[in-house]
Image 1 (cartoon, one colour):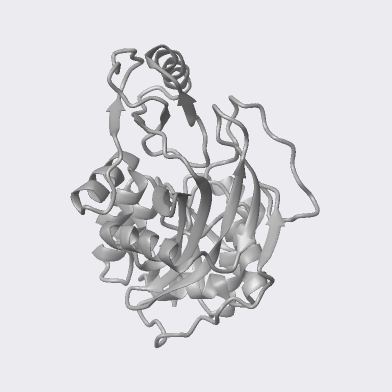
Image 2 (cartoon, rainbow, N blue to C red):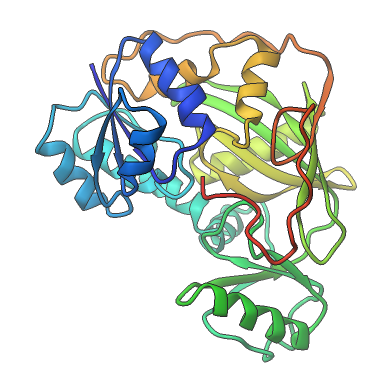
Length: 339
């Protein structure tokens, strides 16, 4: 069976997680990437083909001119929609491309949640520096519409700060679109889920400690085996409205006065080695369970055991190795490489 894995830069999730899992599943892997040299260096015994993976049409063409696909998969936050469209084209199981788009596009996510009546957050998009949003409910959060990893995410207290920070971001990211949305108070948490389109399992989550405002650098994640049931119910309802239920999903949310509100949805497994930590804590074959549903010959529904690890486990971000914390990066630098 042939698995096509779409990737940008090499990541620990792929190198230490998904590729070994594919081997245990007996899959032949072809990596499609726009950085083939880096992947050749990371795993020289795996087939790697150059491809403009950000363009779903290029992905379809590359696969069509190679071996017949049995699965198309990615754990990249940037490539979920491309993988979903390619899987749909070849008639393979995969995520709904509309759901991947809603999750990746933070403005569209807000519109979808509001239309579904599950949560309404004041939000708008800007394409150039501006101080004209005088009626915005400050403080507001400014962030790239399709960003990841808290990169260029900043809290602003008024129109003047918005103009200054948005100009700085646009200078670093020409052509980007920024989302300006109301700040949601509360403690930050994550919910990790895994599904096959029929059954969705909740694997637990993390409590995230952040740097002081105005930036949002993740400094420590503490594993939580089970969030309170009312909180989980609220988050799952919001994920349902987005159409999320296939494969792994890493959801960030805040809880304030008992109300859970989504910050962002990463329709993939959690990264920064926390996925490796999660697999060990829960004692499950997380990477096999995550990639297997994409196979055309997927096995019957498999039970994922309840968490067996300790009730809490701490790790400093961005590494999941608690014994090797990394220092906080400069505030205006990218926090980590693209996932």
